[in-house]
Image (tube, rainbow, N blue to C red; front, side):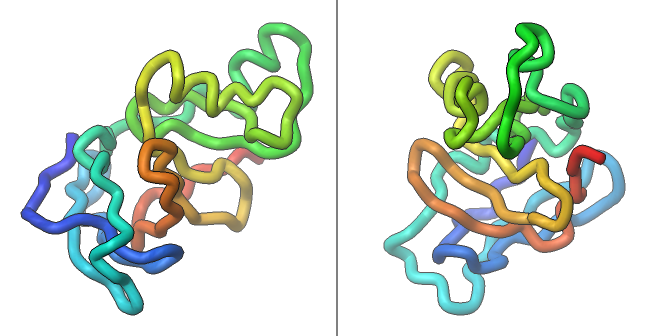
Length: 133
């Protein structure tokens, strides 16, 4: 899990966290440039640094023969689900069913994270870059 050193992710689209270590690294929380203490993700303690993607596509869409627009990866367990622009909206469904609030984009070239509970977009500098091929 995550080591909380007393800070929180702040700001919208600010790189405010740093990934430290190799395979099982540790997240260090710290205020980033342009961040204000009003916007905080309070759920980073639920991120599992060892979580890896569950597959190359949306788990539910692949099982049911559905289609997706974009993919998201749960940062608590690695579940890959489709975005809210997709017919199934399985990433949001996973959040509602499993209670895992933090996801990251699973799209090539995108490195943003989203907290459903706090409705906050942020970045994590140096985090493993997972994306489908």
